Image (cartoon, rainbow, N blue to C red):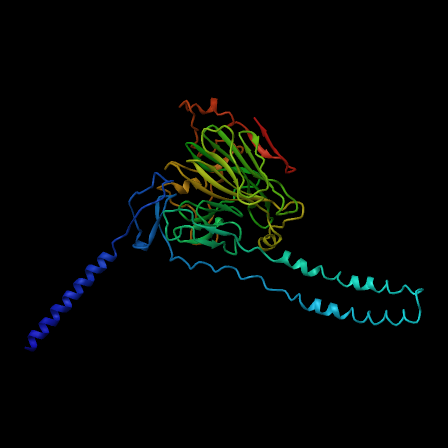
Amino acid sequence: MAQAMVKFCVCLLLLLAAAAVVAEGAAKKPKKVKCKDKKYPNCYHKDLYCPKSCLRTCVVNCASCKPVCIPPPPPPPSPPPPPPKRRGSPPPLSAPTHPPPPNPRPPPPPSPSTTPLPSPPPPPPPISTTPLPSPPPPASPQSSSTGPKRVMCKNKHYSHCYLMEQYCPIACPDRCEVDCVKCSPVCNCNMPGAVCQDPRFIGGDGITFYFHGEKDRDFCIVSDSNLHINAHFIGKRNQNMKRDFTWVQSLGILFDTHQLFIGAKKTATWDDRLDRLELVFDGEPIFLPNEEGFKWQPEISPRGVSVTMMQNTNSVEIEVEGIFKIKASVVPITQKESRVHNYDITSEDCFAHLDLNFKFYSLSNNVSGVLGQTYGSTYVSRAKLGVPMPILGGEKEFASSHLFATDCAVARFRGRFPSGDDDFSDKFEYANLNCAGRSDGHGVVCKR
């Protein structure tokens, strides 16, 4: 009997172990994921599988068409606390205590001396002067901050997050958007396709790297068959380093047969109320009112081109249907940033520059450029990872002769023409224009 029980127990243990092995094998099977955003036709509903590092917890980055591991979504941030109430009640209490003393004074003098004493009028003026200190309380509402910007996910494919209101992080109170996959607000400069600060790039593969280039030079950051983007770098030489401090001051964009210029005007003293953004489309300046939400479109354009004011000043969203969307904001180098990074910025120039975020809808696998190459399906980052500042070299490889030139070593651009003729050199009217902002910060000068 005892032997039978032992055999039964052994068989039971073997069955449990086999079940555990089967379950473990099933758990290790990678999860199949798909892109659900129709804006990316090359990736939409394409079957992909989670990488080994996150076999069951990944999503598809539709822009790069690659599965990406994600951390669990953080809880939505709580709304900012209401501004503290200022103690404005005590002053009015003390104010009425002053009128009683002057009141007893006037009655005695007029009784002995009849009409010749018109002294009572003088006391009222001092009483009327007491309210003058009251202006400080009304000034308090001006000091109360409006709080971070409210944002929401507007992609219906993410029903768990769609139209859920959230607040921008403290690091970027007015420049963020909701990552619908994670359902949390993310700073524009921390998303794939971002180009910000002393140029810090976040590639389509999600890897962060720096490309410093050189000041007063132009570099190709995206080049594909029907899209070419050059960036003009401004900067300042640091005597203790072998490179320049650089920032992106303007972009020269070519698509189809069109040319688009986006630039930050040179500015000495920064003022958020003044718009320092400059836009030119096919040689014609674009004038936008200081009105958030205002949308501009060219009168004649074969493709949907639009420029939308994201704030009253210094921030726009530029979209060309089926090709790209760019969020551009003009920002200065603050005194704090200058002190922390030893930029040595003076009052003559705050080095106003562009913080950018790119989204691309139809890049080919042959795309190149500092940023564009990171969207290629076979691209492997050349930056040294695992260090505080992974730097990508290749200044000679990406250098362009001017802002609208397509002569960098990795150029792919040929343009698209309604007639189907690809003879770029003869028919692209703006390809040989050399455009740059004037030294005084007013206007754009273009030369052939």
